Image (tube, rainbow, N blue to C red; front, side, top):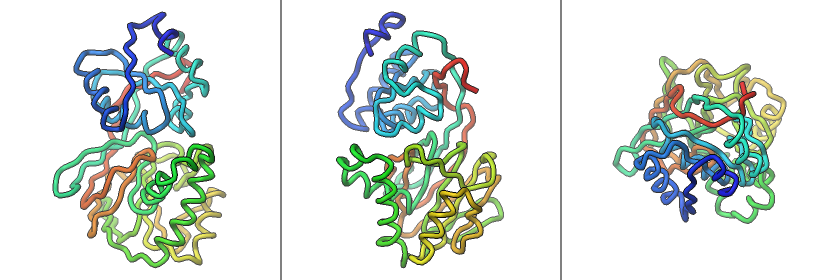
Length: 287
């Protein structure tokens, strides 16, 4: 990768050892005035790099080498790493891209995180938590591992769980065990399985509020997701479309995830879409 990129750029390779180290290296690159940071890895690496680059003038490039590479596919990035590197040295453009900003309280202190394609609280965050506990299965089975973990989490962890989070969006309010926010054309960290909550593209946000997940409704929910049916007709689920921002309060705090990365437990959270917060290198033909 460095050899390909060095034909057109001054390249400084860096090998992060953890998510925190990834953010630290990215922040240093911004402070040093680098024009572009190429995140080579899966959605986790891209997520942590983008979290720091959001709101700066430094551009995000993606070289996908992970198991699913959801964000790379959304941006039209070539699947092969060498092809993605050559994109940076050939015809491309820098596309302003929205991000989801999450501000809230964690462990009594203020916190901020960003999401590129998926964010949720409760159910899907606990799916991520359980899936990450078996990283070898994630590596070998990818989306199948997440799907299997999702079913197990619903049956074991949520079928009797009571609502402990108050969700508010404008005049709409609900008590929920889970909240999933869609702000891109598909909501997924299940590989190529495209999930959508509303009838059309979210403008700006579509929210799936889960009031309860009794075991008897799990097959119906899964079938509705796969068919693209109206989830709002399933008892225990509400779909709020045309949402501008969302407020969340949870007691006890509720686990969150962004782009398939755990963000920790949140006592409160305000979720807002920030348009054109990040510049991403995409193919010239991308729309």
